[in-house]
Length: 452
Image (cartoon, rainbow, N blue to C red; front, side):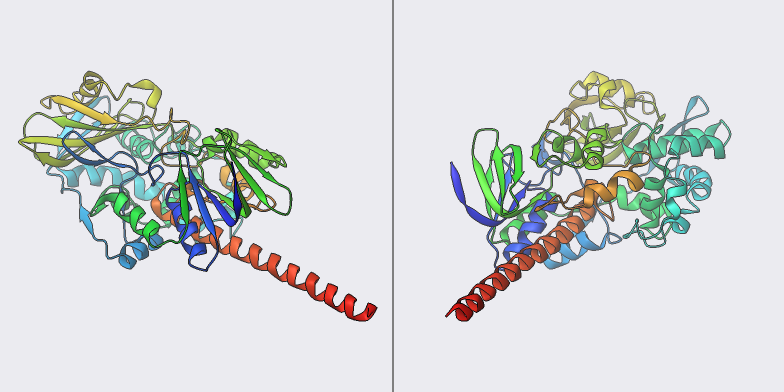
């Protein structure tokens, strides 16, 4: 079924799409969102599992993230901290260790401070990572290669590799050193604040509360169950066709799907080679996130395993009816069935043998065709070779999302930032089009007067 011509069609109702739609619709433009899922939020998803609401996707925010923090203040939303760990477990030097959380943080910091000391050198303006070319000298260097070049085999290297495998939610052999440096530069070069930003403060009411507030503040219409199959631009308008044959048209479009989902969309004209190749390569983040319920109440703990473990990080988040609910992460979703309590138990037992896993809850974001990845983290060469191409408009089609954000790629903050930038670009594009039409009409009127 053909729909009316909108000013802007937004593909995807994650935070980038919701933000772009709000900004444009509040300027009086006709905006329509098409979303494949039956919910909003994209790779954030607050769902009821294990007896309570849990963030199945993205979770934590921080005041060092200016875009998301401004949105929380705009809508009067607060944050709540994860529990302060009382115990720590870690794997280093081929064996497990137990101690205080401060001891583990100190071990991480002894190497990490040295590892990221050049972050501001390469990214003095981290929200404008392409502003200078210095980073290109190291953009082909992987995190793994730099760590192994910089630190001898042993406990410090083990801990540092696991810490960054956690951050990338993927293996380190292709993880870009520039991505690691840019992340830390965003917290003024302080790795500890960066770690706090990654896993400490949650939104009261969950990510769903912020997504709902942005949508409620928008004048855009939204259509669910619309999986985009093709996007064509005839230079006058953009047609967005769904897999079920539905088509919507806009004077311009903003595409906010993750890179792996982008390669499933047929574009006419074809995407430029660099954009298509960047989408095909995707990101490093091919990992897993799993919630699990433990028998009995456990003092809050944090645990860091080996970099190559199927699950290499665990953190207690809640108590419920006499039990404990914790969350775990691993760098390779293909190495573990996170729907199997026994598989999760086997990994946790390597560090916390007394803990008994009763039930698990997860979503395989990597196997999900609408995501194909967890939080996006750049591979080597992506920043210099593919990011500029991904950010560029393709005719009347613009792109947004945390995959291509200038700031916190992989965070809600980056998605919001890119949604705002795409909205600005779309508004400018439409204004230019209106001016061009106005000039044509003026010329026609002048021609008519001269002929008269």
